[in-house]
Length: 68
Picture (cartoon, rainbow, N blue to C red):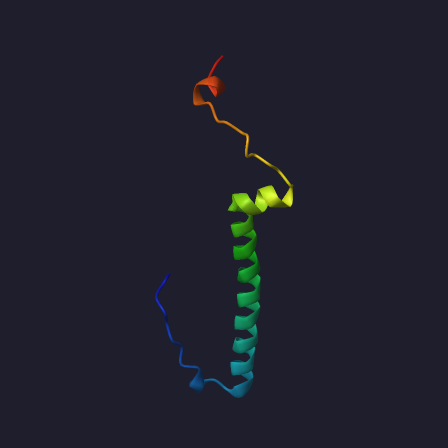
C-alpha cells in the first residue's frame, strides 16, 4: 500500500462528505487499536513488565534443549 492517493470529494454533496469523514475517523480508531494491540503482543519488554517476570539470570543452552 504505501502510496498516497487523493480523492476528489468536491463532487459529493455535503452530507456524503460528512459520512466519509465520519467513516474515515472510525477506521483510524479501529485500526490504531489493532496496530497497538499487535505491537504490544510482540513487544517482549511490555510482556515481561506486564507479568513482572525477571529473566536476568536466564541462560539459554541450545544443546540442552535438544537433548533427548
